[in-house]
Structure formats: C-alpha cells, structure tokens
Length: 272
Image 1 (cartoon, rainbow, N blue to C red):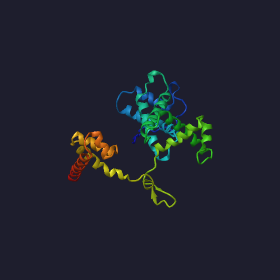
Image 2 (image 1 turned 90 degrees about the vertical axis):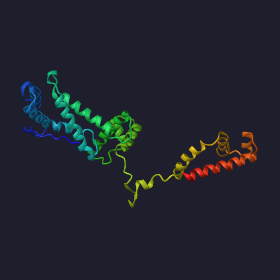
Image 3 (image 1 turned 45 degrees about the horizontal axis):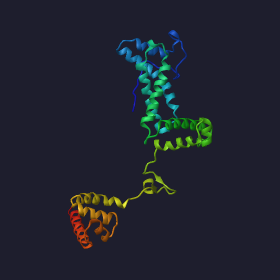
Image 4 (image 1 turned 135 degrees about the vertical axis):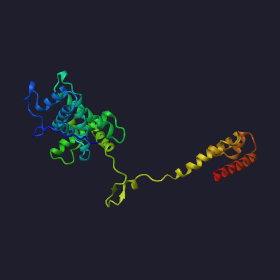
C-alpha cells in the first residue's frame, strides 16, 4: 500500500501546522484547503490539493503513532493515515463552518481503527477485546518510555488503563492473534528444531479415510438384511448367536452371510 504525494508548492516548515495568520484566523495550511475547495477543477486545484495534503502529512503520522504498533507495521499505519488524510482533504466542505482539523482528525483516526480491526488480526477477536488490546498496547508504550523495558507488569497496566487484570491478560493474549509465530521459526536452546516439529503429529487414522469412503458406497449396495447383520456384529459387537436371534435366522446362516458379505466388500475395496 502506498500513497504517492508530491507538492508543487513548498510545504511549510518545520513540519507542523503553524499558528493562524491567514484570512479569518486560519493557518496557512488550512488556507490551502479553503482555496482548493473554492477553486474550479483543473491544474491549479490539483496543485493546491497536493500542497494541502503534504502540509498535513505530519499530523497524519502523529495520529498513526498513537496506536503503538510494532516497528514492522508502522509504515503500513502511516500509509493508512495518509489515505485518511487524502479522503479528508477531498471531502472537506468549508461551507459547514468547521475547522479542517476538526474533520480531518476523526477521519484519519477512523481509517486507522478500521484497518486495525479488519486487516491485522489473523483470527477473529471480539471488538470489545480489540479496543482493550489497543489501550493496553498504548500503556505498554508509556511504560517503556518510563524505563520499563518489558512494558510493565499486568498490575502496572491495570493501573494505567483501569481495565480489570483478567481483561488485561486477555488483551495481552490477543496480541498473539495479530502477530502469530511462524511454524518455521527455530525453537529450543540450540535453535535446531522448528515450531512445526514440536506440535501435532501424524494421525494414523487419516490413512483409513479413503477406505472408509469406498466401504460406505459398497455397504449401500448390500441387501437390507446383510447391512443389519454387519451393523449388529461389527457396530454393536453382538455375538453371532445374538445376531441370529435378532434377525430371526440360524447362527450358521449368520456365519455364511458374514463370510459372503466380507468377501464382497474385500473384492470391492481391492478392485478400487
């Protein structure tokens, strides 16, 4: 994701929105937005648009930094914030009488929240827990700035956020849903075993799946009495005498039917 923004009008320095000194008490940056809104479509409007977006980029990036995401995702958040800024510049209506920042900040913040909610979780996490996770992450950033390299204890985070300790623990666990470990990551003291080699294993019953599917279709071809005998003998674990009494035939007949039925099923499986 990238936003290519190039200004033909020099942007104000030192990189922040300056004090109002334009018409109506507006800042030079906000004046760009107002001039763009009043300008008809054409090259001049596009130049004013690009200059306004460039002037407010530091604001968008500061809002993105509030979310305290890992370094590897900061660039993505910056890009999302920039897209929110572009939307704010394009949609802002000076005729409503609001200052540009009072519209732009919620717009940028909303884009960031939607991105974090919809595109950064590997598994579904309830919205309630996502919100608490964000507050806990911000509290961890604050603890690290205060010198706690580990981000503080659960009790420290509870004191900063006001969230119940159990909920803080759930929020910390939820972080694993956003940044899951790779199954190829080396583990152990010697780092010679991958995570995939330490979890799970082969289920020998999986080798029977194909045979069971084929067997089901073959059993369906049997007469109803033979299917009943198979179910009683192999499924309910009755003896041949008990099967004979249930079906109403002799034990010898049950034995012959079982032998003939098993032979039919064996031939069908081997033929497949």
